[in-house]
Amino acid sequence: MFSTVWPLLAVVIGIIILLGLIIGFKLNTFIALIVTSIVTALLLGMPLNKIMDTIEKGMGGTLGHIALIFGLGAILGKLLSDGGGASRIAETLISTFGRKHVQWAMLVAAFIVGIALFFEVGLVLLIPLVFTIAKRAGVSQLKLGLPMVVALSVTHGFLPPHPGPVVIAKELHAHLGQVLLFGIIIAIPVTLIAGPLFNRIAQRLTPSAYQREGDISALGAQRTFTEAEMPSFGVSILTTLLPVILMLIATLTELITGHSEPKNMVEQVIYFIGTAGTAMLIAVLFAFWSMGMRQRRKVSDVMTSVSEAIYPIGMMLLIIGGGGTFKQVLIDGGVGDTISKMFEGTQMSPILFAWIVAAVLRIALGSATVAAISTTGIVLPLLQHSDTNVALVVLAIGAGSVILSHVNDAGFWMFKEYFGLTVKETFLTWSMLETIISVSGIIFILFISLFV
Image 1 (tube, one colour):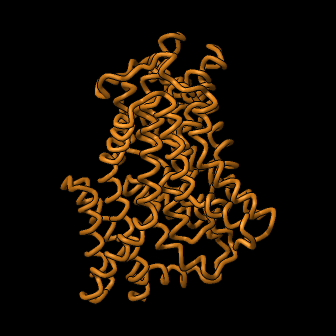
Image 2 (image 1 turned 180 degrees about the vertical axis):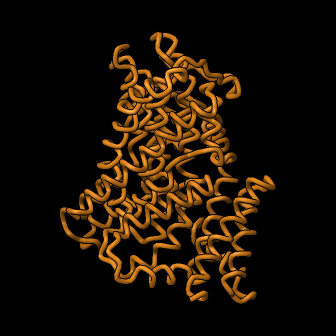
Image 3 (image 1 turned 60 degrees about the horizontal axis):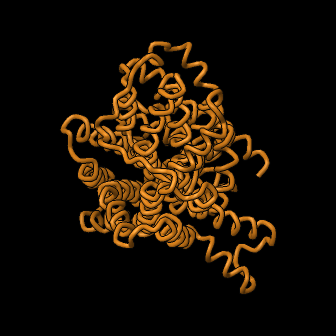
C-alpha cells in the first residue's frame, strides 16, 4: 500500500521543498525548480546516472518548442509598443465607445492588445493609459483597471501564442489551432463575466478600493505619441492579430477539408504558414514594416526595440525550462502512471481532473506557468487511455493555473501596488477576479466537451 502512494507523497514533499526554497529562503525560482527536481527524482528512486539526463530532457524538450514562439512574441509586443500601435488601438476604442462606456473600451482594447503582448508587458503599457483616461473621465482608476487586467489575464491563460497554452499544447500533443479556436470561444464570455459583471459586484463588495489613488511612478517616464507618430488603427489591429488570423486560417482549412495532413501544395502552404512559429515570424516581419519603416523609424531604432524585447525574457525562459524539468521528473519517475492506475474505472472527466491538479499547484506554487507545465506530467498518462478532446484539456489546465492568485504570486503584489490597495482589498478584487476566470472557464470548457 505504501509503495503505491509513495510517488504521490514524493510529489507533495517536492512541492513543500519548492515552497520552502522560494518563500522561506527567497531562492531564485529557476534554481529552486532544479534543486526540487533533483530531490524529487531521488525520492522517486530514480537511478543517479539518469537524473541529469531527465533534467536535460525536460529543459530541452520544453524550451525547444517554446523559445522560438516566446522570443518572437516578445519582439512583436515590443514593436507594437514602441511603434505606437498598442496606444493607437486603445485610444481609438476609447474615443469610439465614449466616456459613458469607457470601461468597455478598455476591456476590448486590453483583449486585442493582450493577444500579442505578454501579461506583464500589457500591464505596464496600459496602466498609464488607464490612469490618464480615469482622470479625464472622472471615474475610479480601479473601475477601468479591473476589466483591463481581466482581459490580459484571460488572453494569457487561454490563447496561443502566449507561452502557457503553447507549452501545454506541445506537451500534451494537442492541435494548437483547435486550442486557439476553442480558446477564443471560451475567452469571450469569461472576459465579460470576470470583467464588467464582476466589476459591478466588486464595487459593492469593497467600495473603499474604488476610492484609492494608485501609484505608477515605479514604471518611470511613459512615452506619449503624437497623432503623426502612431500608425493607423487598421494597420495596428492587423499587426496585432496577424498570427492569430494565420493560425485560424490553417485550423479552419483543416476542419473544412478534414485533412490533418496536407494533400496538395495549397494545403501544404496554408498549414506551414499556420503553424505557431511561422505565423509569429511572419507577424514580426510585418511589424518591422508596419511599426517601423512605415512610421519612418530608423532601422537601428527598430533593432533596438528587438534587443530590448529579448533581454527581460531570459529569466522567464529559464523558469519555464525549470518547470519542464520538474514535469519530466514526474513522468520518468512514474508519478503519472501511478495516478493513471488510481483513476482506472473512475467517472471523473480528465478535463476536470486536469483543472483540479493545475488549480492546486497554482495555489501552492504561485506561478501559473510552473503549475501548468507540472500538471502536464501528471495528466498525460490519463489521456493515453481517453478519447477526451486534448485541446479542451489544455484549456482546462490553463484555467486551473490562473485560480486564486495570492501572496505567493508576483501579479498579486503588482496589482496591489499599482492601484494603491490594501491586502484585503487586493484579495477581494484581484484574487476574486482570477478565481472567477478559472471557475467560469472550466464551466464553459466542460459545456463544450459535451459536443466535441
